[in-house]
Every structure is written in C-alpha cells, then in structure tokens.
Length: 211
Ligand code: BEZ
Image (cartoon, rainbow, N blue to C red; front, side, top):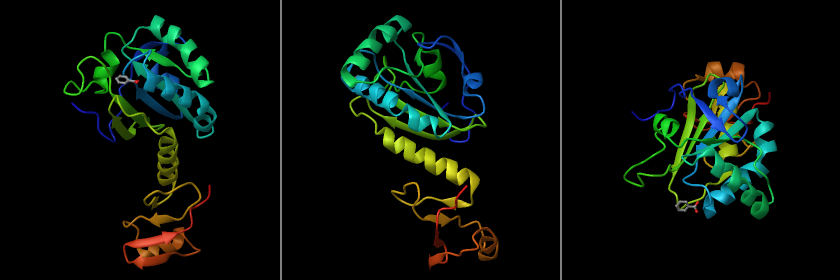
C-alpha cells in the first residue's frame, strides 16, 4: 500500500556509506529527509547528491538529517562518491543507503514499475520528529529535483507544526502567512494580538509568528 501523509515512516536497518544505521534511532528527536535516486554513476543523480552535500548546513540548521538511497550496492556508492566530489566540488557528507535487495525501496514505494521496474524513482519523504510522513514528492528519473524547494517546504512544515497558520503560494521564510480557517476570529485575536488583514473572512493574512 502507498505510504501516505500522516503514516509512520517504516523503520529499517540499512548499510550506508557512513556505516550501518537503524533509521528511527538514527533520526533521534529531529526531522529527516529520506530521498531515493535511480542509479549510481548517472549524470542527474551526480548533480543532485553534490547539491545535497552543499546544502548540508542548511538542513542541519533546521535540525534535519538527510539520507539518500538507491538499489545499488555499497561498493558502488563508495566508488561513485569520488566522482561526486570531483565533479560537483562537494563530497558526500550524509549517509547513502545501499538497498540492493529493494527491501527499503519496497517499504517506501520508491519503485514505480510502470515508470521503471528496475530502479527507484526520485522519491522524497520529509519525516517529522514523531516519525510520521509530513510530505512526499515523486519526480521521474529525467528531472532533477530542486532542493531549495525542499528546504522551503521544511520551513513551512516546521512553522505550521508550531503555530495555527498555513503558508500561501510561493511563501518563503519571513513572509506573511495565513491564519488557519479552523480558528475563529475570537481565538485568532488571542493568538495574533497584532491582528491581521482579512481579504475574505476565510483569508486572513498576518505576519509570520516568531519563535
Ligand atoms: C540520471 O541520473 O541522469 C538518470 C538516471 C536514470 C535514468 C535517467 C537519468
């Protein structure tokens, strides 16, 4: 069955380029991004993994650990790491999971047989400290992902987990947000003492809450 938002992200043991991990234990109390790529020694994947290595400080500052995965064996991951460092200028600095028996890929529905029955697609799962799936994305092999967008969604997820707000289209950290419709005006006055602008009764825009 497809893994859906709100489901517990399945726990697993895996061999990785950083040694064996037990996924939930490795996550600890923080957030995680688990993403798959189709295959080692392929061009788009090489650029993606270099970019994730470059952005590692941005994930860390948000208390997010990142792990990649493909169905290639660990020896291939280690051999490919040299190419990533050489061509992208950023060495692998996060665990790359080897899943040659497709055990984890199957648990997470990362193989879409009607697209390709051999390789994982470009899946992304953002998992919260409660180990629940907060967001999932699926891209085809031919389209590299935008990891800035993934950071942006993490900012939204972390903000909306704390405050009774939602983030509008194209929102970025620091911009105005929307008060959730489930909050009455009376309840909103308590939570947002500086007020809001009501463009419609259901569309109340306010400053991004801090903290
Ligand atoms: C790539 O990473 O470049 C790639 C991988 C599998 C199929 C197509 C492209």
